[in-house]
Image (cartoon, rainbow, N blue to C red; front, side, top):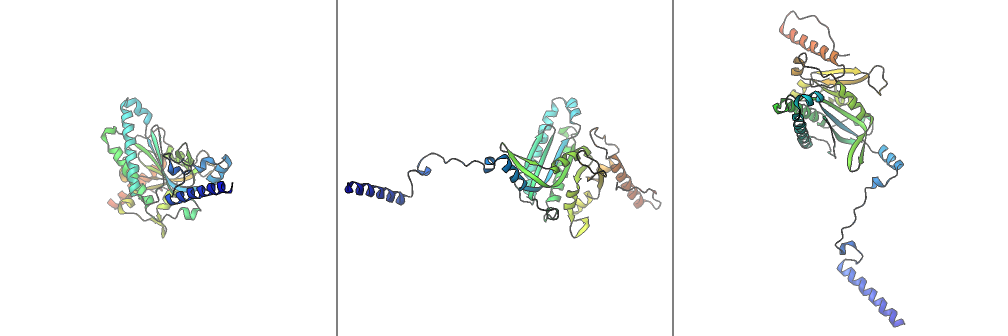
Amino acid sequence: MASDKDDIKDSKDKEETDQNQHGTNKSDPADTNEEPQKSADPIEQLTAREKLEYLNNHIYTGFLVLFDIKDSTSRKHAYKRRWILQTSAFYESFAKFIKELKVKIQIPWDEPVVKLAGDGCMLFIPHLPSRDEKQDLNIKNHSPRTILREVMTFRQIIHDDTELSGLRLKIVITYLTNIHRVKVNDTNDVLGRGIDFSFRLERFADSTHLVVNKYFIDVLRDKGRPNEISLSKLEKKILKHVIPCRKRMKGWASLEGESFYLITEPDDIENFLDAKPSPERGDVHTELMAHFIKHHRKKQTANSTDPINIDISATP
């Protein structure tokens, strides 16, 4: 019996020695042609309560850009089947815009959230984990101005494309904090009150101007000179026409209204009176008209020794 036990022991010792020499184990998946099973997403293994706690501890800042085709309903009637091709072409241009922006932007580029919804589209660009307001607004790179410049360039390309039959865009840009990034069925999404606010701002947008929130203006400003904006000559020319607005919005209780801004260009101002306003646009005509008159008055002052005596302020 002792001899049998010794034989068994010697056999096991030999098997272990062979395995060590060859660096493999018979039970190791590497010995087979079978691929190792991928571990499941750990987030998906959490309970609903654990997921909520996870989301509350993973909040981010980021830039949200909304594009919406102006008067899309009337375009469907006016251009029949062509509006489908035009909208498809716009989406293709939007995809190219994202690709080019990814190269030019100077922030850590995580997976952006992109949504296409009928006649509009949304892009959320994650920035950094959200901490407190002071740190969230201290952006030490050129990403805000790059986004603004590229958005305005993209808008001009779309508006100048004769194949799109006069397609015009309504645009909103916001810089947001406390945004939750979630994934549902392998699809990225974002949640937060700032997302809701951005969509509320869309009703004030039109092809004559962009709508931006206060935080976006704040991150454009030079911290050393809080009343100025440190930009190139072209960007300073653009941002010369920044119009403050304050309107009450559904879901926000402030009696004084919420603060936001319109960004327009000289050509847009000159053409404002001739532009056909969208019936879906919110009431920001007063702010635009006040700014137009103020701009016109400055031109008159520069060209005449007897300027028109009009005192109109763009501040509501």
